[in-house]
View 1 (cartoon, rainbow, N blue to C red):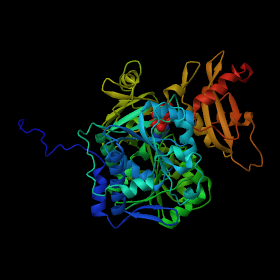
View 2 (view 1 turned 180 degrees about the vertical axis):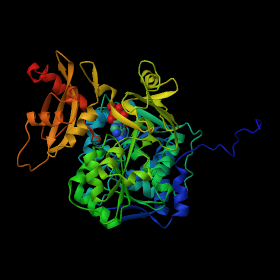
View 3 (view 1 turned 45 degrees about the vertical axis):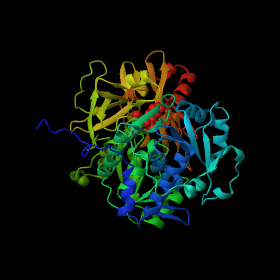
Amino acid sequence: MEELKPSAANSPPLTPLGFLERAATVYGDCTSIIYGNSTVYTWLETNLRCLRVASSLSSIGIKRSDVVSVLSANTPAMYELQFAVPMSGAILNNINTRLDATTVSVLLRHCESKLLFVDVFYSDLAVEAIKKLDKPPILVLIEEDEEGGDGADVADRSKFCYSYSVLVERGDPDFNWIRPENEWDPIVVNYTSGTTSSPKGVVHCHRGICVMSLDSLIDWTVPKNPVYLWTLPIFHANGWCYPWAIAAVGGTNVCLRKFQAPLIHRLIRDHGVTHMCGAPVVLNMLAAGQETLKSPVHFLTAGSSPPVTVLLRAESLGFVISHGYGLTETAGVVVSCAWKPQWNRLPASDQARLKGRQGVGTVGFTEIDVVDPASGRSVERDGATMGEIVMRGSSVMLGYLKDPVGTRKTLKNGWFFTGDVGVLHGDGYLEIKDRSKDVIITGGENVSSVEVEAVLYTHPAVNEAAVVARPDEQWGETPCAFVSLKPGLTRKPTEKEMIEYCREKMPRYMVPKTVVFLDELPKTSTGKIPKFVLKEMANKMGSTRLSRL
Ligand SMILES: Nc1ncnc2c1ncn2[C@@H]1O[C@H](COP(=O)(O)OP(=O)(O)OP(=O)(O)O)[C@@H](O)[C@H]1O
């Protein structure tokens, strides 16, 4: 059989872009996008609009492999551009709208962006950013918007060469979209959240994104025609590949600009939402409300460890929660807490504890392991021995843009080194304990900040908690907790009481020796708590007072 080789018939490049053409054929009359009070498109229309924009980009002079950036909230245009930009042959670069002008300009310069689509609400940010560039990209204004965009004030209109609606109008609906020559051709460059260091430009190819999109449907068992609410920013790792995945199953995309609990609940009710994704911070916001759901909504959470108390509360309101783990470098969720039917018989608190574990590799991914950093060998499956999480699979990035050293450090010995620390349980399920940079080493003992946070979250007065290392003359480091309290408490706990609470629930060496109360914990642009900011605060406090030990 050795003479049977790949041929043109069995090896066309894998790409997620063809999902759109198929959706137009199969689900042509079905609703593809809903936004505001009156914007509704069908899959037939979405396909034609994307072809028109792609053809307009080609007419403007955008060529294969040029980078085209987008600065937008989760609007219909943002959704369309996930297809239209790569259909023009260009490489898509979504930019986080919560960044400042200097960082936006750094990213645009770094990826040598040729054209930038700008949501009207971010026109000032874009104009400010391009002032800092010698070779600014062509600016396209996305102006039409049901939520008041038409009337929004655009300070410097002269900087915008085109408007999105004109590109849609003038484009050719019969455009022969530009297919990748090779499935390894880049399709996106996404910047990481910058939680641990400056954002890194992660490049993914058509093949990786195609596999990730399909995998994201299978793993979460998404049926045909789901109603998907966009509570995950599309600018964050392309919304974990769901823009392409939802086209594959002919779903309805409910777009929204702001992530606010009352609006989210209204959209769930009005449109019969069945699926949504979000970081635990979004889940926490929804769980804090009292509103129960009329019918269950599937919620996939990833991005940081979801506290058990948040999982419990959200499930009691009617959310059916799945928990996954992924990185910008893997394009989406590649490890998930695959649920076993026998776990349904356990008490809710045990179920939430099991669901808090990150889980096992998804079916489309290849291998996950936890290795000892010194020996490189797999750690014991004992739920206690910590090591670095490594993985290999089709959706691991091609590498970091213009960073061969960073790429070599991360992709080595046949594995992607995640920089996350975890344990493997006896049943093969992975649990993240920390990021390598955040493990606290106190008197030679490794303390997982995530474990201490999980205990703090069980305190009835705690809204958010983050634990970092504080320098200590005697122990090297000690755990230092930063806590925000729930609003409206009649009596606030003291630092001493919080420490006492932890003492009852964890070994002494893990107990925070300092508890700092903040009104709100700092957040990165993707809603994560930037521990380096808290570490700086802890460093400034100096050595933990010996009297406390
Ligand atoms: N389910 C999860 N539980 C715990 N942590 C998670 C989970 N999902 C993702 N993470 C964390 O998020 C990280 C990936 O996030 P992302 O790619 O957005 O960038 P970042 O790592 O936050 O930023 P940077 O790499 O710039 O510091 C993972 O390495 C892991 O630490």
